[in-house]
Structures are given as structure tokens and as C-alpha cells.
Length: 349
Image (cartoon, rainbow, N blue to C red):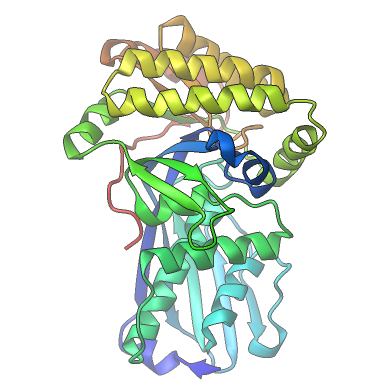
């Protein structure tokens, strides 16, 4: 184990990464993607300028302290007693991998806690980047984006007990607007990344994008587990396969700047999701999605839904109309709000 207290006393270290919204999430989970690589399982995600940061400061020798916005108490443990099953277990595991001690980690997020925007995955990406910066200061080679993604995904998948997807970490690492094809059968790389928009395209989509928090926090594992169970039994599999093709077309529409087509395809995906993932909708998110469709936009819950956030796409005039309607509806729900954000091109830094 390497003491980094003195190094951090000279200069604290910080890294940050963007959260995301998505279409076609869950197909990035191996249980779905591996048996169906022939249909090219795909996800489109959009990184947002709601960033999560990991800041590292000096702390007591032999100890590690982790604190985060949204959690009442920090956790402090000796290096020989690090818990990987605590609320901050994933972060302790990352620090253990690097072999550091004598540091304090402060996690801060510009997005609401447990808002279905990929929070924990974004945080672990930011933390690994920060730990990599320490490693460089110690004279070692820094971690590439591919290496950060590989480590973040496998740590989270392992610590969570499996059935963890990779799209949240991928959006955090690379930023931008991307279509991903999941190919876990490939021995060298589990995905193909296709950038959909350049700088001008991202500006245009940002004006046609609306993101909101429903006021209710969510836990994705419970919802995802039910979806996987229903997929494995083949109960919902035809719907998932149909949704996958719609998401592929959605990516093509975004790439072509065909915003009306993209909105229509998002409505089609949501129609299927209502059948195969009804538990993803709460009364509030159901109403908000219906309001989006009423004005000609397409809308979808982020991540596994069941609360958290949702997002919409459409022509500028229709998004402006929707912003007013969503604002009225959200004003009646505690903690709910429209999130001030646009597309983040940068990824982890």
C-alpha cells in the first residue's frame, strides 16, 4: 500500500465525468446482449453537462475517508478493513485496486442523487481518473480512456454481484452522443462506439433536448433484475428485440439531424416499454411522458426508471411548449424540477 498523504498535501487532485440519458439501455447487460449478438444489441446515450466530481485530499496514514453529497455520514476505515459491501464499497474497492492510503475522497454531483442518470457509474469513472492522476504523479503510466472504462465496468459488475451494464460508464468516459453495439463475445473489446454528432450537431440537439427530475429517487438494481428475469424466461423477449431495432433507427435519425423522426422513434420505443417494463413508470413520469407526446415530442425515462429522471426530444417550438407544461406539473411535486443542462462533449477529465 502506498501512502499518498504528503503528495495530496502539496496539491489535492480532482477529476470529473458527465452523467447521461439513454435510449436502449439494458441491452448493454451481458445476459441480454451475449445470446443475441447476431441482432447487434445497441444503446444510444447522450452525455450531459451535469458532472460528478471526485476530489482527493490528504488524510490520516493507514486510513481512507469517503464522503458524498446525498449521504448523511462519511465512511472511514483502515486499509486492512475496507468494506466492499457498504454504501461506498465500490469506491473503497477502486482505491484498494490502486493500493493507496492516507486520502479522503469527496464525491460531488451536479445531478440529483439516485436520479437514474448513471450516478454511481459516473462517480467511479471520475474516481478512477483521479486515482490515475495520483499514479502519474508517482511516476507511473496513467490510465487511458479504454483502461478507465474497463476497470470501472468490471469493478462495478463484480462488486454488485453481476448483471451490471457498461453504457453508463461508457458515456462518462467518452462524453458526446454515441451509438454503441455490445459484442461481449469479442475477446478484445466488448463494444463498438459510433459517434453520432459533431460539435454543430451537439449544439442543435441541445436546443431540442429537455431533461427533468421527477422528484423520486430510484434504485436501478431491483428494476433491472426483474427485466432480466423476464427476458431470460422469454416472457418479454420479443418486445426487447423489437425495441432494439427501433433504437438502431433512433441513432440513425439523430445522426441525420432528423429530430421529428427521432421523436417519433422515441415514442415507439416508449410504447413497447410500457408493455415490457411497466414498473419503470411512476404516476408522475407517466404523466410527463404523456405531456411530451401530446405536444409532438418523444420522451423516455432515463436508465431503469421507477422514478429518477426522464428526457424528451423534439422540434424547438415543441420543446419550448413542453418546458412550460413540464414546469407546471413538476412545480406540484416536491424536489422535482427541470434540469439545466446540455450535451457534454468532453467525457472524463
